[in-house]
Image (cartoon, rainbow, N blue to C red; front, side):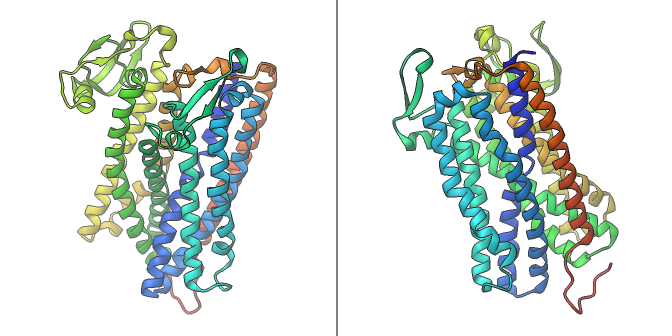
Length: 446
């Protein structure tokens, strides 16, 4: 394998592993703020116990997330040095803003959140919870802004020539509010809020099935289920808005997402399918003209297909198609499951329906997979561009890195990340099995 492909695999490995953790911390941050806010309002000690328990989970997630995320910044210099020089003025400013406005805000108040229960007043502790939640979301803002600039560049000009070319910022706010940044940011945040909500639902359902900490579990699941229901429905509309943007600014990606090959014709949407790339044909179950209707609000409006783009400018169709459809299927499944949970809650049967509780336990993996498939759709679908329309991926790789060195680092990263994942799952399971700390005199099923 050549160094470009190996470098892409290496970065995909590190970013995919790292991205297990930020959505959890972003989602849990919001739920922690709700739980502690309810405690301040009602003075019910149950909400305090809930907050203290989930704060411990948040601290574990934050620690592993930081450890796994440091590697990626170094890869920009080691594996993608020409890319770093080309976009350093643009990408570097967004990463710097992420460090100043997000990481320091989140980590600065995290100590108060974790250790300040008896050292600061309740209102100050709640303020710290809000700042940690806000800092986690600020981190997402700047990372998504930087990545969205790669998808839809704006607010820049190119200076220099040849290998000395680079992008310089001409309008910082045009960079921040580039055409896709706000839609993509909402999509990412909704996915993160779903991830945090379903973690709480999963653990709470586990406790209910085991008949442990039942009051705690019922209260936790009610809060998280409301968040899951709202965010899953909003995610449907956010995804539709994002698809409209893709059709406008990255039509080749949209064509790959739905396997549209016809040069210009009304296009349908596939529910499931397999792309036969040599024959430029999709085999599966679909709905005619639905893509035209969803994107252009007119079933007879043509959609540019892959044949309208040179073969060298087409993204990998099979990978983009499957990642996109897996994301959509999981998203629809989460909508259905959260709606079922809300219906059973309304009928007073949720906590006695063991089959649904079992589904809740395993559903924690759903948002994680949807997040991963969503990023795969965005990044694979952007190919062959590392900065859309400006810099091709093979142009961004470092000139002096050998394929052997990259392959060795992939194997080492795989071993280290496997160890980190084992450690995370071990500690997470340990905290879940221990459960919320009991207050003296409180009677709970053990």
